[in-house]
Image: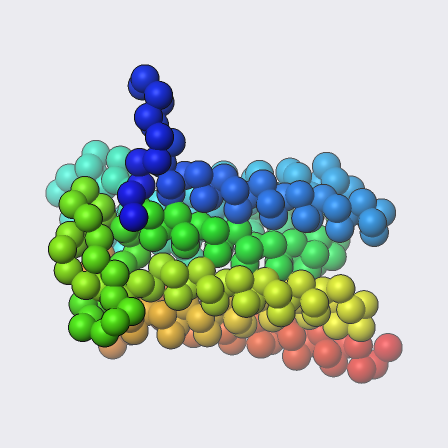
Length: 251
């Protein structure tokens, strides 16, 4: 696999950036269609997504710097300009930005979040395929037939058979999208979609961390930083689901 797909003069199309762009555009298109069919504001949807992306990128970089704080203070410019990100930081900051925006507009955040949640998994799936092309977020060394050897120039160690954690994550996120998409279409269970997304992502992220081989992810006790956060978000997601079911049961 190669991350540099096409070079025209000073312009180079990278597989990583291309797949992220595809994920954003596909997810945005699906979400806008849902909004139109339900009489919801496409403007609010668009602004939520773009604010979520902007602050998501900032949050992902910020958490990466916090996780690698000791190395960051030794060489700040290197880490700020590096390709390192922590997805959880992006999800937390992006969601917070979207929540503040809907609150300022007097719109129901959960109504929009439940509708957008399946597409978040979809965009993450495309993003992980992008990670595969770049070689980031790679897995541990393996001698199985499913191992992948990355070429020189990748972010992953070259010439070593590694677990393709990026593709495993992408597959899981595609499955999550299908599950959440079907749940969100059912008016009876629609309001649980956002909580179920948090639950599914937390479980998936906790499990995939056991297979990851990149070291710069921090640790809290025996857990990686992402696993520790996954435990907290899993509890939060379950709380949302159970609270929603209880409310529906009293209506």
